[in-house]
Length: 199
Image (cartoon, rainbow, N blue to C red):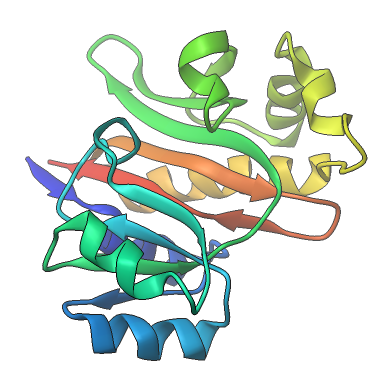
């Protein structure tokens, strides 16, 4: 099995037509400063060597020019992923290769709510637009997508679920894929974190 950590997984998805957040990998503070200037503050810093970064204090959000150095040092890593800090409704998209059913496509509420709500819909590959639409509408907390002034564009979510379907067609060796979160607002759906396991 080959595990693609976040930077590799995001590069792979970008090549496959997914919109991915602006980012760069820094191995020292000066590189982190250069990348941050290029993509524009505020940024998020992530310890690129950790798998479950949030649980282990490996993510620092909303970093600006004044606290970049302090934040970079706090991560204590020689590989730091610098990303544009962006807002949007957080959803998760996923693929799991099941021994019985084959590839299964998943959609649900993402971000910090993933573990709390466990609100996920699934379909067995292959799926069509109707399946993808049903997946979006059948989660229990679907109203989260439209609450608090910012709406998530459901058509963009559906398009991204269908991209997973296309991905499986051409990459049958994917055993597991997690996009969490996909940040969605009215005009964009951007991959902000990803991990892929391949055979």
